[in-house]
Amino acid sequence: MAYHLFEVFGIELEYMLVKRSDLKIDPTVDQLFIEKNGSITSDIENGKIEWSNELVAHVVELKTNGPTDDLPGLDNLFAENIQEINRLLQKLGSNLLPSASHPLMNPHTETHLWEHDHNEIYSLYNKIFDCKGHGWSNVQSMHINLPFFDDSEFEKLHAAVRILLPIIPGLSASSPVLDGKFTGFKDTRMEYYKTNQKEIPHMMGKVIPEQVFNKADYHKVIFEPINNAIKAFDTENILDHHFLNSRGAISRFDRNAIEIRVIDIQENPSADIAIAAFIIEVLKLLVSEELISLEDQKTWHEDDLFLIFDDVIKNAETTLITDKKYLAIFDLQQDADVKRIWKKLYERVGEKLSENHQKHIEFILQNGSLSTRILKALRNDFSEENIQKVYFRLAECLENNRMFRP
Image 1 (cartoon, rainbow, N blue to C red):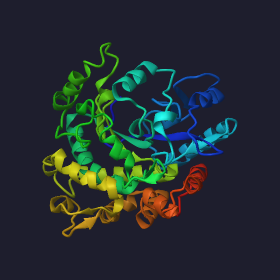
Image 2: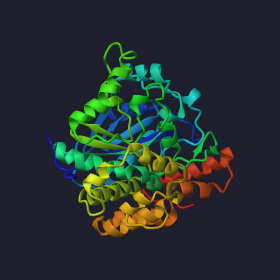
Image 3: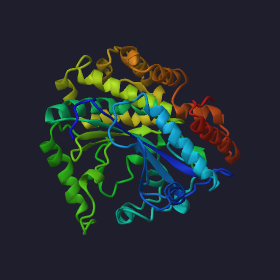
Image 4: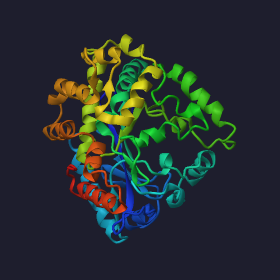
């Protein structure tokens, strides 16, 4: 069934399994699924939420079991599933850990690929790209899926999503620490994401999708080069171009949806769903053309948007935006940091969010991205003991569905 713009939504949240004793990566999602289901399967339907695994054995994905129109109700649904998983993991000596990257993982020695359903796909990916790296096996994100009915709706949604993508990490960055040190990037996940498919550049493009606004052009400009580039590697034709497209927003014409992928996972599902709701309201605003006309949105080249994005993954909400044309979209005449842009947008759409979502967005705008708060809590002490202490607190925030305070 095809849906119209903003009629329904799909949300996906990824979490890693770690040992309760020392925070070490625990590649036992298959054992979790046996505890829940009695057998190993790649997907478990648990009412309105589905559990699944992709690529690596220490990451579990929770997602809406089909499209939903109830964003405010998702907070509690995800929270209940997280608590159920943590209860099952107690027997295995593990628990779920939020944030978009593990701060101490050595991906070259600790990565275990999923060995069950779809293993042939993951094995081929590993053969092409070597998935034992931070950009593959040490990344957790939220994906938002938004429907479009036809080419006309796709044009509007794709144009709006492209405009907003560069500043999303200013709201959601949560991956400042890898290998036991501050990387210099508040969104290190996206810094790795940019280059983890360098062997076949067509798959990633410039992260920001190209200026294509109908299905035929999308196939010609994006899918055909991907299919041609992968032929030499995928001799048995087991990879699908929808699966291979790795831009920061991918267009799924198999289900008429755009999937936004540049959002780091937060410390609890209430924060994630609040961010999703906020992004969706801003996209509605852009689609309405109140801020900028559709034709002007379409004129933005991916290279110019990528320059802004590339700065934002480094400094998140404190990134100073100096592109006058981009600032003008948000009615800002002077140079402004990304936090100022999001505050301006919140003034426009905040009242359309639920009271609970308002509370979480206001907390983030007041206290900074999760990356900023993690770095404050670490207080420049990157000893293993201190990192463990801070990230164990994050695990508690996830279990109790509360915000992380430095």
